[in-house]
Amino acid sequence: VAKDSRVGMSFMGEPRRVKERVGHIKAMLNGPMKEQVEQLVKSGKMIGSGATFPVLLSAAKRDNGIVAMQFDLFAEARQNLEDSLEQRSNDPTVHFYLSKVMALTAKTPEEQSQAVAHIVNAIRLDAARGSIPDLHLEYAISLVNQGNAANRDQVIGELKTYVALYQRDNAGRLPANMSAIFDYFNLEGESTW
Image 1: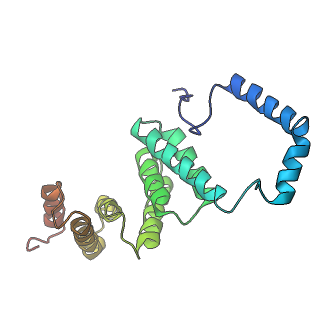
Image 2: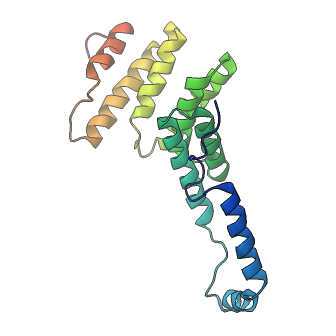
Image 3: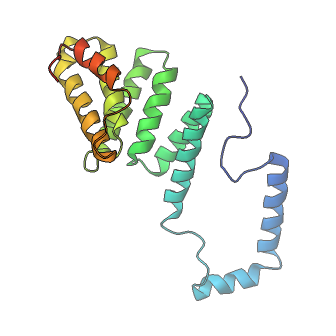
């Protein structure tokens, strides 16, 4: 499986052309435009970088990672999501999708544990807003897959949280996968909810 050249930074193109463009830009900035750029920087009319740049770069990497996942480009997805995490470690969406890609590609119990750690971190980061209901469903499923009866109450709690947050975001409607949710409740011995 080869790396798909279409996925990466959304504004990048064919490598040879990128090198040509970068070379041209450097030549212009160090040559004919150097004095003009320096005057603009001194006057405050040009800012080379700002506080929002890392956030924007992180968002672009996150979004590219999510798109790569949708096309089953798991290595590219993981790389983009990890790059995003380096820029902005407090983004619950990055942790959520990184947990998903890691769970899909985990080959060892340690890698599976890393996937669970990312989803737990995403839940912690999203606790105040509760903006990603699927976090709780994915975590509940990962707990069920562990096969540990001691997780029963936590699984039930996560499933209830998922349904409540989903309803909050969808005008009280139940999730379309409610029959599967009921199956998980029954699997954990909860038949009254």
